[in-house]
Length: 139
Image 1 (cartoon, helix red, strand yellow):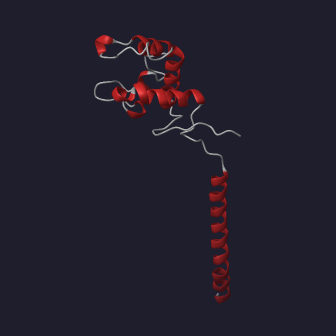
Image 2 (cartoon, helix red, strand yellow):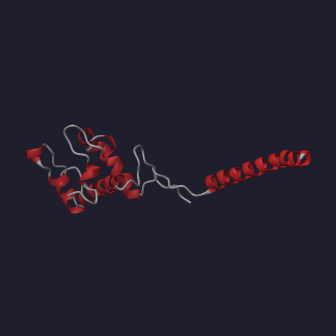
Image 3 (cartoon, one colour):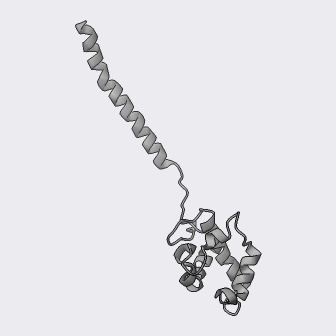
C-alpha cells in the first residue's frame, strides 16, 4: 500500500507540469494568432472619420452614437435601418431644415459625403469600435 501512495505522489508533479505546459502552449498560440484590429480603417473610412469630426459630431455625437437632439447614425444606416447610402448622401447634401439638419452641399462633394457614410457604416457594422481609427501602414 505504501508503494502505491509513493508512486501517486511522484506522478502528481509530472501531471501538474504537463498541465502547466499545455496551458502555456495555448496562451502562446493565442497570442500568435492574428487578431482583427478594430480601429484599422480603410482609406475611405479614415477620410470619412476626419470629415465626420469636422462637420457631424457636434450634433450626432462622438463616434456617431447620437445625442439628445440628433439620431444615432449607426442605427439609421444599419441593415434594418431606413437610410441607404443614396439617402444618406442626399440628406447630408441637401439637409432637412424642418428637423434642424443643415445642408452641407456647399462644403462637401458627394464623394466626401460617401466617405462619411463609409466611416459610419463601419461603426454600424461593428468593424470599427469607438475611438480614433488609424490608416493601414505601408508594407
